[in-house]
Image (cartoon, rainbow, N blue to C red; front, side, top):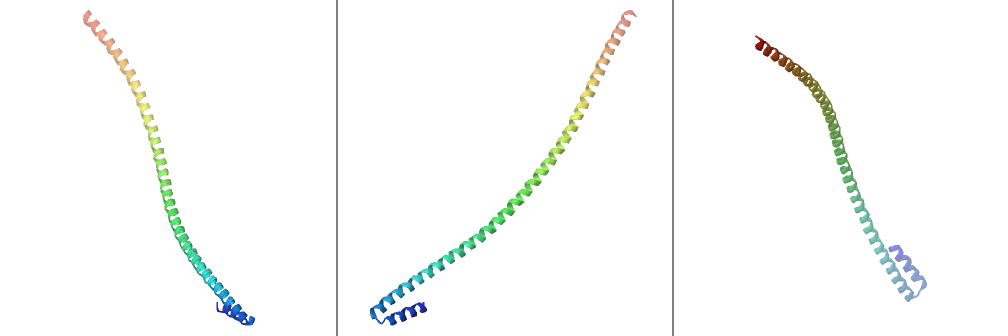
Length: 137
């Protein structure tokens, strides 16, 4: 600022005119005013950039934390899926074993029903035989 004023003042002094010096002084004041305004704007913009960087850093930290949480939830869900799959496989095996037992029991029941029918036939025959013997004897 002082260097700009010094140059302006020396320029006005070289021209030797008082009016020129006053105009030059007004121009210098306008330049200095504009320079102060620009420096203020630069400071404001630097503060905004710093604030934006701070917010960005905070958002990055939040993002990393959220990502870590989601990854942990995903690992838990994957473990649950594996557990459910294993449970399903075990239940499928148990169902197959129970189905085999039911089939075996049905076969045994069928065999027992055949045996029962055979026994009933023998009872009927014996009853008829006994009745015949009682009638004849």
